[in-house]
Image 1: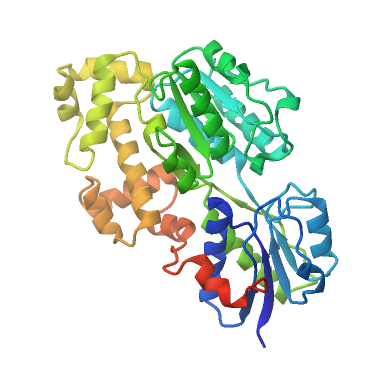
Image 2 (image 1 turned 180 degrees about the vertical axis):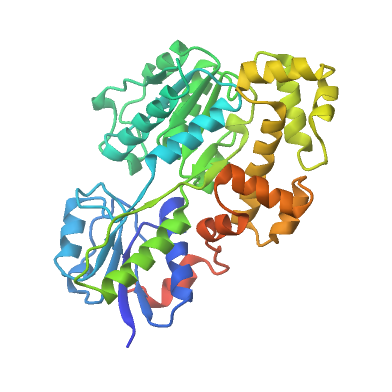
Length: 403
């Protein structure tokens, strides 16, 4: 007999849709799950049929107490993947790692002025901002400006999608920041407010203000101008892990399981942060040369020749601005691209090493393990959840009670 599984996960946002894709990847590996779900938004009220539905397990992003309570009254195994309802979360993101990704992304591009913006009152977005500030403290004497948006100007939940009142407040805050400034927004829709405000007051993006969102909602990020860089929350891994945990809970209903922490995967770089904010023309030119030619068999000699500096001078200036050597920067850029290929393709590890300029393959694997603490194969196993070839709505439609 198949297990009846209820999914209460929003389809209105990219994060929720990719969570469903991760769950579907787990379902494809099994033959004993029957899925029930409906198209919904995070803030949608609980559907009437929730109360009469009977099954074996639930995966939910409960944005309110009422929805969470109705689902828990069924007294069946449940996995919660949103903390806004006040119930304990079973699968949640690593805020510290997200902040580390954001800080390193900005720092490597030469930014030394930072800010954080959120247009909601949720606890998780506050924790995201605090983690960002804490990571900056580790870099030394740098500070992070937080937008003091008055509470009466914002709504109670981040997915309402609108600031209650629009005036000059946000623009005035942006004008007050030292330039160039790197701004992390709590989610992509908040980055939209920053982009709009920058345009209204004449702040150039990314030249004066580089803006990074969270969530990597492809539709939102691609619609904005300039297109928005964003941190990918590893949403498919969220969904796959939630399904794995539910299976364990259903098989061992008396056992207590610890919450699972999911690391965001990477920064998806688009135009809003695609700039080098270093006030040293030769170092900036060398960084561009590395980014444009890292797949080629280049080394420190070619990098120095691209900017007509001596090796010693180039080394000193790199350490002054970035705190590392040109060789280390070249390795970092190559490994960053290797991670992308390991996550998003099925290319053989040896082919990836050759493609990013490492030869022989054993050298690539040795460097990768030294810098990341795991082999390329281990990294791929940990971070890759295959993308579905069938859209989530077609995958689940036949079991949709709302039809």
